Length: 437
Image 1 (cartoon, rainbow, N blue to C red):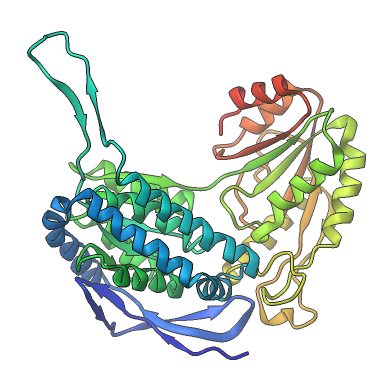
Image 2 (spheres, rainbow, N blue to C red):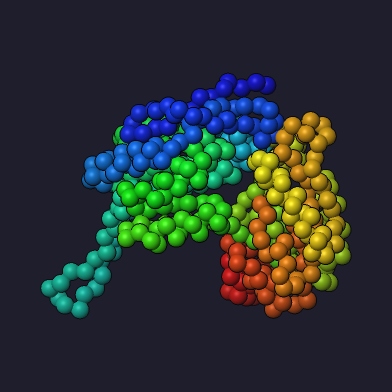
């Protein structure tokens, strides 16, 4: 079904502004389908947005916190009104199946509702003083202008995690969505405008990270950078902020998360957990399990069930009934995943399932790759069990006891999330305390 072609614009200081150059926004499930055209922002656009946010900051910080919370209450009502339409936009742009897209919009809605509720909570603490005539208290104050730089894989929920608390606390915002998902970012800003956020409090700049994102992070009017994305980009942002005399940042980057299957695990639960964690969203989540650590006593049976279930998963256009997951986001992601699949072989893996590039049933028009599952021994220097792949690529790693499982889990510069499948509460607590996630 053909969709109306969107023509996007930047939103600066309360005005929609066109750009001289445009980027095509394509459907990753049908890459010959152009969904819209959006500005290729420049350093000047980033500067204009940061300066607009700086001008709006004094009035916004003096606005009643209750009033700011009421705007979020309005925003929640608008998101609920448009929930299905927002999910449809998100699904087409990101390649998520519709149920996942809808769940993400609901997650964003819940964040907005939370922010609205916290507007009426205490925002400081009274502290006891050793001197009777002296008052001590903690009072929160806004920092200023916050740059919100967000990824394509959760293009509605993640921005609201950052925009919501930043605006409620009295900061103003420049929002730079991913160039892969500009339409849902635009819809979010349109809803903020409809909710009544004053001009300059929320600004939107489209474009490439290395162009407009870099300029925004470096601009002197930006006080805080909130970023979710790759380890490399996040590390660069941290360096830029460290060199400044006033910038701070919060960067959520990659992971090499894992599911740990203990010798007392329920096999059906363990297989289900591994499949959902590794292959939902086509493995394109920062908390996707790139590793499943399995006690050697369960290894053979676990692998057999895992591979059998993985063969049944349907990777297809998000509009396809029964689809488990959709495409990868772009050709660069396809190339990266296939490169790591081949690297696993080079590093001596035993390949259990190679879904490969999927080109049948019309999937040659999209970025579809099937599950790749392999057994790998833990050994120094192996990249595939230590580096984030961000696709349907899963290493099965055997272990002999809990101490070895902890060592394997911690042997990566990434962490972030972990699941432990066990019937023993004390064992779970041990993993919780000893694993660095």
